Every structure is written in C-alpha cells, then in structure tokens.
Image (cartoon, rainbow, N blue to C red):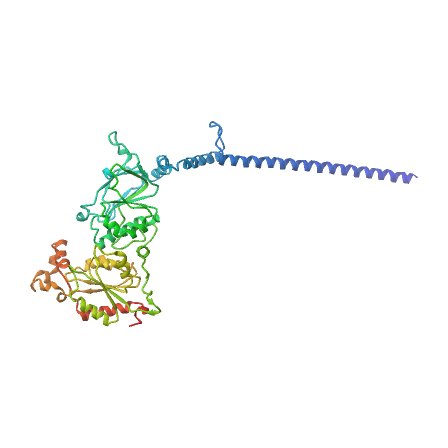
Length: 500
C-alpha cells in the first residue's frame, strides 16, 4: 500500500510538473505571437507612412510654407514646381518669357567664348541663352555675352571682294543697353536653334556655292537633324530655289529671309549660330565636325536630295548586262574650252567609252545634271568651277583635271586635287604644254606670258587670272590624252570595263 501511495504521489507530481511546463510554453507562445503581431503592425504603419510621404512628395503641394519638410520632400516639391511651371508654359509667349532653361544655359556659357576667330577662312559665333535677333539694326542681343562682337557671316574671311556685299552683324550683351536703348521684346519666338548666314559673296559660281556656303552649312547644321531654323541675310531668291532640295534636307523649317516681313520683327531663340564653319575646300575635317561626320556624309545627303542611284562604280549593271563605262566631258564655252572637243569624243569612243558632253552654269537644273554626273565613271574637264560636280560622282569614279598652261598647278591642287581622297574618288591630271595652248596664237614666242609665266604671276591674282584663266583655251594632244584615258580605264573596277 505504501508503495502504491508513493507511486501515486510521484505520478501526481510528475503530472503537475508537466502541466506547469505546458502552461509556461503556452504563455511563451502567446507572448511571442503577440510580439510578432505588434512588430508587423508597426512595420505596416511605417510602410504606410513612407508610401503616403512619397505620394505626397510627388503629387501634393506643401500645406504650410513655414514648415520644414525632409530633404527628399523638398527636392520632390521643387521638381513638382518645375514641372508645373513647364506645363503652364505651353503657350510660346509664357514659355520663352519665363524660360528657366535659357537662364541656366546663359549661366553655363557665360564664361565660354561666343565667337571664335582663329579659323583663317571663317569666323563663327555660337550663342546660347536668351537671344533676340533685331533685323532693323543687324543685332543679336545675347544674355550670356560679356562683350560685343561683329561678324560678316560668309566663309571668305579677309577677302574684301567677297565680303563687300555681305552684311555685318553685331552680337551685344544685355548689359550694353542704356535707358535710350532697351532690350527689345520678342515678337516671334521659336524653341529650335537658328543658323544665320549670307548667300552673297561669290555665290552663283558653283564652286563657291558649295565650298563657301553649302558644305559649311552642312558642318554647322547637320548636328540638329533638321530641327534648326535657317535665317538668311543678303538673300538671292534664285539661289535658294536652285539649292532648295539640299536646304530642305538640312532644315525641316521654311527658310526665313531676315530682311522681309518688316524691320520691327524681333526673333527670339535659345541658341543662335552666326557664320558657318569652314574646314577645307570641298571638304570636312571629321575631327572638327560636331558629331564626327565627313564629306562622305554630305555625299549621302546629295544622293537623297537628288535621288542619285549610284553610291559606287560597281553599280553598273543594266538589264542584266554590264554597260560600257561612261565618260562625261565638262564643256566650257567662254574660256578654257576644248578647241578639239569633237576629236576628243571620237578618240574616247574608240576606247570603248560611252561619251557624254555637258556644260554647267548658273541656270543648270541641278537635279538633272547631278543624275547625269552620277551615272558617269570618268569625269573630264579643264580646271574650273564645273569640276565641282565631282561631288555627285559615285565612289571609285575617276576625275581627270586638265591643267592649263601658265603655272596654275597650285590652284588645281588646292581646289580639286586635295579633296579627291576624302570623296573616295580617283585622280588623274593632264597638264597642258605650251604647244597645246591657244596663248601661242595671241602672243609672240618670246613674250613673258609664254617664256616666263612666273613673272606674270608676280603681278598679282588679277593679272594671272586674266591671262592664264580667262584668255586661254586648250587643244590637248590626242595621243597623250589617250594614254590618260587608258589609265582611267585601268583604275575602274573590272565590272565597269569588262564589256570593252
């Protein structure tokens, strides 16, 4: 009995201990669960506050201006304020009048030289900020300028003859205004950059059209991909019409004649470039161009503008068969003309060339002429502006420059020889000897013009041009010229010559 009683007591104590342990565990579990729930509630509240704070920061204005919000909320509020101001300024007037970006640009570029005068051939000014173009005074008021600049926007710097009829423009800082000369208010406002240039100077001569204006204009404006406004001074309407297809590929906006439509107009822009960048004759230095483009990119633009089919001379298949290589002779009538042009044509045809003759002048339809040149494999011409049409040639074509007697080799080299490689063309030169020049019919055999051309050259450009360029025609020796034509055939791709 005692033993049973003892065992009962032990069992009771054991059960009691187990009961207490279970109770303690249950209490612990309840407390842990409660703590976890409390933690989750607190976490939820914190997340809610964070989310609401962000929503408020991005979409709500501060209720009390004197309360100091956290830094993140201040930045967000400033951002909202800027966005609100921009959305309210969809009106062009409000946008330009309160343009904060223009003020920032003005501050950024206030220490940047606006005009660069180091180029030997052209001065260029590039101003940003609040810019106001006043036509009546040929003045551009520049908010970021620190001094006044003057410029004639045509790429023949130092050439008095070219610049004589090119208008001079001034760039003036806002600070230069006085009570008698207030900064004019905008009457026309645009949010794209503007490029100001002249089409006077030597324009009308195709060489100068391209090397002085069109290629420099490409250098200065191609970076904007059409989002640029051209402002033209010294307008020649026929010139704009002649090159309208090129101009339309450079700007998506109608060209503005600065001196038409009223002298009281004040045109305002966020950026103005006045004067065009010049790199080299009929060429572009890709290291200096704004986005690294080259003269090849300009040729691509010409192909698009005029619908030129051939990018290179390998594009010579016609109706499934290889055509004969085409030779185009640039003819001249007034000076430096081929006296024996008919015989030259016959000789070239005997070599297997398909020969064409064309003359380029001021009234030439550039679309038709450009397509004719693009179809040629070999271009032949006496030194002169007509050789500028080599810009329309496909890559791999051959240019044969016939250099007149009298020492103009330097001129031939600078104008048409040097650009050849960048244009992806091939070059041959035929130099006229004394017996091939018509000057022997005009001067005695012992005359300095024939015996000592250098003495004439020393008299100056006008004397040199009058004798060796304006008074001279040529009659190339057919045997010598034939050898040059045969060299041209060897330079052409095999596909262009296999039909011979």
